[in-house]
Length: 281
Image 1 (cartoon, rainbow, N blue to C red):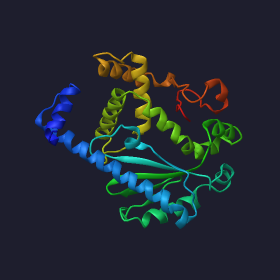
Image 2 (image 1 turned 30 degrees about the vertical axis):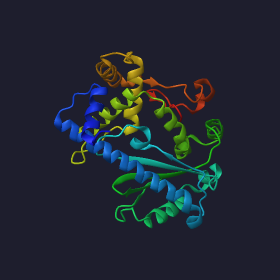
Image 3 (image 1 turned 180 degrees about the vertical axis):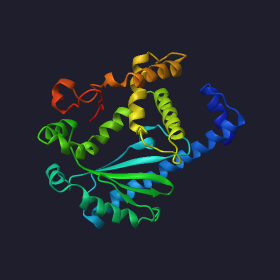
């Protein structure tokens, strides 16, 4: 019924946004790019599901989309995605004994062959293959296919503390669930916080001390919840004040959510204070 500019203008009125001509253009570009980015990621996930087993012997049970695109906290014109493959080909004991190196080599070989992959700059970390796919920064990770968080947590009780981080990726699907359940207003505030971080620690500056995007997310969600911002016309101001207070008093932080587990059941897995405990990990 409407051309694109009219549709964006109606969206601005509906959301009560201040829409200058420049903002309209920025929003329009971001909306188009976000839609296209999601299509590209769907394409990549489909390739993994259809061909990874045949080419590299890794059975794909599920592909979970995290990162800014998966969580709904995109920073305009900056798209990133964590793709996590859950596979019964892997086992906890196998990872504990041999690590991820062989599996990541297989994933690297697979993505290098894909038409949309930028061949230069494919990088291996201890837990991921990092590369660019059709202009999107991708972290590709792999995990045993845990039936539930309970199964993962029970397994971790027998894992030496220094090795537990290797299994963090296994909680990804439940992290995504937690983020998807957040109000849209919170996701908008997270995007703003991440944009501030991007501008504060630009690539041209020394990036030492830059918080991770996920840490920005956890702090913002907690500040929103504890400030009573929900439903308030001053939600952004209340969240900001609480967030500043959390950072200024970081030595006493004890942030956690009983979203996927009861704190009392896994006290042996919790780190010492100050701490921000992942709601799924």
